[in-house]
Structures are given as structure tokens and as C-alpha cells.
Length: 127
Image (tube, helix red, strand yellow):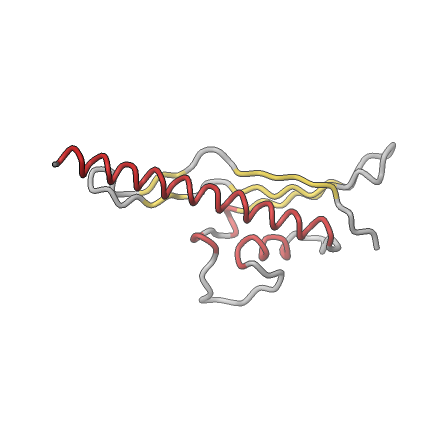
């Protein structure tokens, strides 16, 4: 019985970890998709807000972020293109250092993911 409970809780932890990782991937894809069709604001704050809150506007203090992420976890890179191809403008959104919280009694703690979740797309918006 103890072995069965241990395996069951391990499977639940693994399932939760996979679910959270896939949710991060989808949220990063959504932020990149939003960024590729909207004008670059010069700072990437709107894209970070889309990643954290699901909206380009900052709702202010006290509003929970997506899966407990912070602004330090989200990197937004804007590439303007080259001199030979100025239309090669790209946006990259990366999430680093996300912490998974386990509920198994023998793990009971957090795990910081060392692998970043990153997506990149060309910018389609032209002012």
C-alpha cells in the first residue's frame, strides 16, 4: 500500500509538472503571437504584461500573475533586422527560472527549471 501511494503521488507530481510546463509554452506562444501583430512599444513591457496577466495593460499591485511568475522570469528581445534585410524584424519571449511546487511528502519543496521556454516569431505589424 505504501509503495502504491508513493507511485501515485509521484505520478501526480509528474503530471502537474508536465501540465505547468505545457501551460508556460502556450502562454509564451500567445505572448509572441500578440507581439508579432502589435507595434513594438520600445521596452517590451506590454509583451511581458501579456505573458504575466494575459493583457497588455498592467493591472497594478495585488493581481496574481500567471503561475506565480515575476518580471524577472520573463525576457523579451526585439531584433530590428540587418542592414541587408531590414524587414527581418523578430520578437523572442523567454521564460527562465520557473519554480515548480511539489506536494509529495518526500519531495515537498520546489524545483527550479533550468531549461528556458522560448519562442520567436517575425513581426508582421508595420506602422
